[in-house]
Every structure is written in C-alpha cells, then in structure tokens.
Image (cartoon, rainbow, N blue to C red; front, side):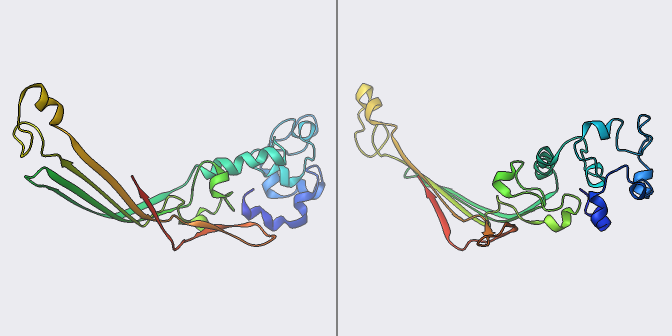
Length: 214
C-alpha cells in the first residue's frame, strides 16, 4: 500500500461500505458497484474479497488477500534504478621468451533501489512507493576486484630452445603451455540482523577480503 494512505489510521480497517469511508475523496474516485451502490475499486469487490476494508481497497491488487499481496513486494524487488561507476586499469604484456601476462583491476561502486528480483536474496522492499529510501549498496557491489592471468609457452619443440627435432616427435613435445588465473576481490555487502528482530533493509560493508583463484 502507498505509504501516503497510512494517515487514514484506524479507518483502514473499516468496511468499505461504511458511510464514513464512502465519503472519503479517495473512495469517491472509485467506480460504483451497481449491485451494492457503493464506491469500490472494481465491480464485485465486496462479494469476492473476504474482508472488504478500506485498506484492502487501497492495495495495488485489491482482489488478492494478504498472502498473495506479498507478490507485489517481490515484483517491486525487480524494478528500480541502479548506478554503476568504475575505474578500470589493465596491463597486458608479452615477452619473446614465451611468457605473457595480463593484470586487470577494477575499483567500483554499485548503488541501487531495486536489488534482486528474488526477495529471498535481498530482503523485501520496505516501501516501494518511496524508492529513494531504498537506495543503498547493491548485493553485487564488490569495490575492489583484481584479476591476473599468465601463460608460459614451454621451450620444447621445433624452433624452441630444447627438443628442436621436427617430425612427429616435435609435434608431440612442442606447443605445450602452462597458464593460470587468480582473482582477488573484496567481499560484498551483507545484511544486518538484530536478535529477535527483523532483518534491516540497508546493507553494511564486510571488511574481510575474499580470495578466489584457480
């Protein structure tokens, strides 16, 4: 529900047919159900929905109950605005001895008010109608990322320093390479939990450095 409607307070729990509720401007703008003569979000609202209250009528999908309305929160997780800024550096060097290496470094920041489309991974949106309050570090924000890879062509085979013989033997011992890739990056942000309380929506930065290599 749009947070601006929270000002209605206890009126949100009153039946939609209540004269006080029917007099509200937001309800007056709803269509009239010919069967009941009351203003409702759609015709048949009072007969379809169990608990036809003002609060239910003001939901984004008033035809669904509380449990199914959780799908609205999941939907809003996949919509929003994100920004990504980065400084990228790369060094690529190849030597005549058959050795080559590449080093790439990225310093970045990813901010978003959307997060993952799967709320289990990022927490429910607190207020989809106030997306500015949702803006924080993305769960995919890894500020520092260093990747190195190297390759060394073994000096065996025709035209190399050792085992220069040609023919089938040269084909077997020649052309072999050794390579490796290492990745070093800072850990992503994590959620903050309070004992006995809900998970906080905003993310906090973890200090350890995650090392990934192969």
